[in-house]
Image 1: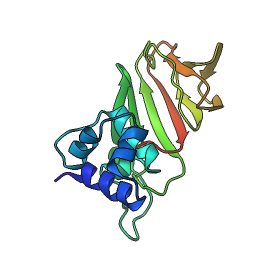
Image 2 (image 1 turned 180 degrees about the vertical axis):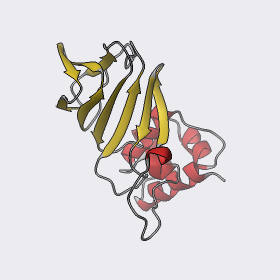
Image 3 (image 1 turned 90 degrees about the vertical axis):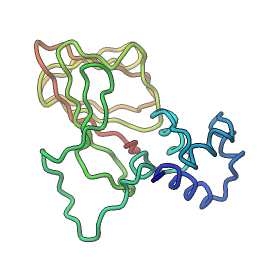
Length: 184
């Protein structure tokens, strides 16, 4: 079943956006968007994120995880955490809540192997971020300033500020990363 395509079309049509207008706003071809909506093509994660942003939703809702059962207890047990993706080699991201399209923020657990980094390029995107280090030492670079955070330290910043991070400790590092608006 083509859940992603069905959800994209449902949300796009609900906003009364034509296929051509939608494709143009994403700098993509109308034929590609049509293929995605019909389940004949799969967008990259970054394209899916762009689509979600344009539709004022989250990637989680697009992939069909945005509807919590009525009366569901909002507890996520450690063993039930969802591995979202590996940001870079040695950096795992885990969702700390159940997917829900009504969330205003997204708490993630980042697990970083020794010497792991966010990659070569700085990240910039809409939103805000809060980081609390649970284990190890992490260096966060904001523009040209470097901040060393150890267990118990935290930082809050605008996501439009070019940013990157790396584990500078002697072992694994862990941090709670809260991002708004949600992406997954």
